[in-house]
Length: 144
Picture 1: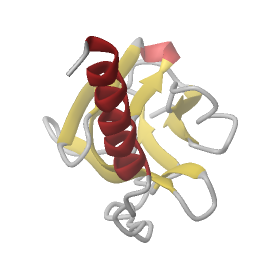
Picture 2: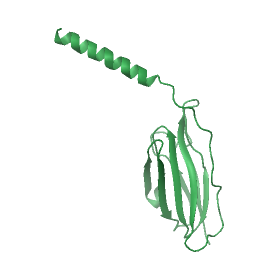
Picture 3: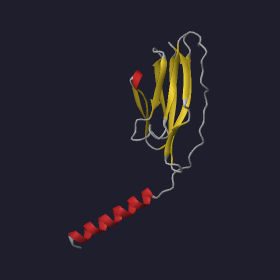
Picture 4: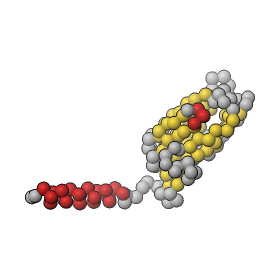
């Protein structure tokens, strides 16, 4: 076969594979799961405030989500976030705490930090348009 025909065949095969991959049905969108309600009590010495959340992209309404939209801790608390991305490409960002952590799909990502500033801090996914589409929440750090 001539080289141009081989190139055309390769393009057709790659195009068919791309079309097949693009048209695969995504896994169903999970229902939001909140496994840890916002907490405001002061933990005993050495305890950690732990929150568990999921992040995903919904093909039905074309929007990204976090399952937990609010967290509350006291200043000085050690915070542990367990984020599992169930569909799409996401990260977890809190600018004021210099946190920007990728969350690979189907893996639990653990993020730990000390809440050493009081106030309300927005956490969000920094992927293009995710924050503007609603994938954000608020961390409230209360004075003791």
